[in-house]
Image (cartoon, rainbow, N blue to C red; front, side):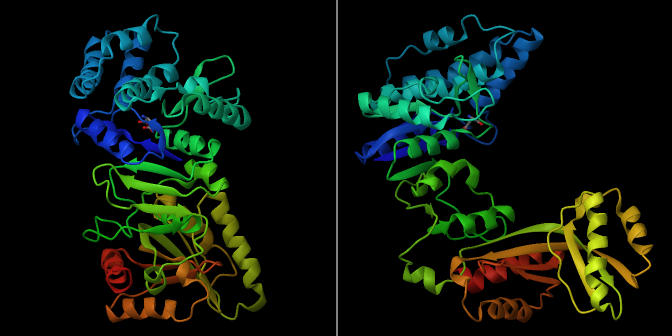
Length: 440
Ligand code: ASP
């Protein structure tokens, strides 16, 4: 049994709805469908959820909102007509907005995007509509009540079999609607898959999975076929835009594979995310890199003290105390015999650069302290790198062969991540060179 979640771009209009139907019908195991609200049809378009936030603002300030409502109605009318549905869209929307006023919660109003979407999709697929308000339960602190939610969804699935349910919201104990944060339909999908012990959680979007590197730097990078949660975390921490691992926590807990798929390219296998892969594919063993991610604009403060010896620890502590006081997130601390450096995001000291250098310069036990700006950090991530000899050598040699100077080097304790710091000017070249050498 598979639980599928379709994002906004997969539901943007009737032609996208048709693709969803074809996908669902191509596999009888696709029994549970979680939907977002219709998203943008093109870059200049609006997401229904954004329009609903706008409606709510109009209501709050007592401004007429008919034209925004018309835009919303038109979107659902087009879907219903294009898909040949018999549902009366206007009656559906009128009923949901009956009695809505200044005191209506924002969560209720914005959740209607998913609600309407699910109503239409249920008719289109011939599945039963199950309202998220009937199974996704929050306590008053906003935490999902897992046991009650699971029991109810299992019960409803048992009664109705194939179901469509809206993402993004649930209800407080008093029945009032509460939404997840933006993008929260991913969470609904993961919770549904977890509750129902699905064999797989398919997350359908508009890309064919997670890319090995940034497509703005490398032309058409390959898709990652399989990635572990630990690798995913390293990649997203370093700036790769991937599904946030918190959102899939419920499926991770039960070791249900997450499969990211592309609604517009349904034959692409996408990316599978799991805790471990016991059967590494030959391709994965040969290619030891899973992905390459990076971020620009870090700074590095280097501290020198000749013959520092045993005092190094105490000096390091003092310097880090200053960083702590300035609230600067420390990224790396590469160190030598008589020196160490602290690497951190440049914008964390934007206005206090001189103040910080002045304070460190006043330290009696420092000979010299220098600030280097314009550093980029690049993370080379791969579970196949762990406990394997020669990997870092290959990476450094490749950068050296291409005349890229490495400013800092770091490897995580689990050896699935090697991070190098290079100058901003070399950032894109370094990513490209690493990708072309090891990821292709
Ligand atoms: N429609 C909501 C949003 O735009 C939730 C979602 O799509 O996941 O944030």
